[in-house]
Image 1: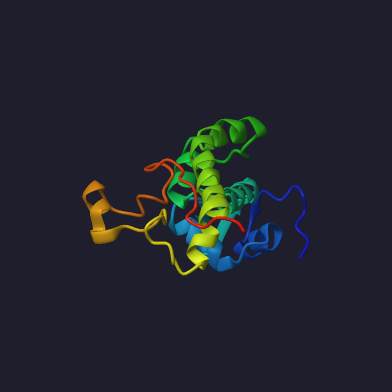
Image 2: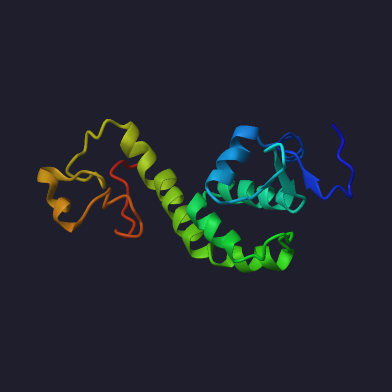
Length: 162
C-alpha cells in the first residue's frame, strides 16, 4: 500500500505499514498517550502525518532502553501536530544522557566483573561481590545493592584468570 507523500492523515493500517510497527503496538502507544488520533464519523482512527516521526522516535528511544513514561514526558514537550526536529531530538535526548551512562556502566560491570562469578557456581563465596550472607545489605534498602553501580562502587570479580 503506497501512501502519497502529501497525504495529511493516515489510517492505522497505513501508519503500521509505513512505520513497521504492528497495529496493536500503535493502539498501545495511543492508549498510553504517546500518539493521538482523531475519529472519523465511522469511528475509524486517523493519525496526522507527523505520527510517523513520533513512532520512529518512540521506537528508537525504546531500543536504547528509555521507559515509556520518560518517552511520553519527552513527547509532551513538543507542540501537537508538529514533526519532531533534529533540535527537538538533541534537546530531549540530552536529558537521557546520564541515565544511559549509568546503564552502560552497569552493563560493562556485568560483562567485565560478574559473568564468570555468576557462571562459576560461586565456589568462592567469601570473595564473591554479589554474596550477601545473612542479608546484611537488606538494611540499606531494596534491590541488588552490590550489582547496581548507582548504589555500590565497582569491585573486582571473585574469580581470577588462570
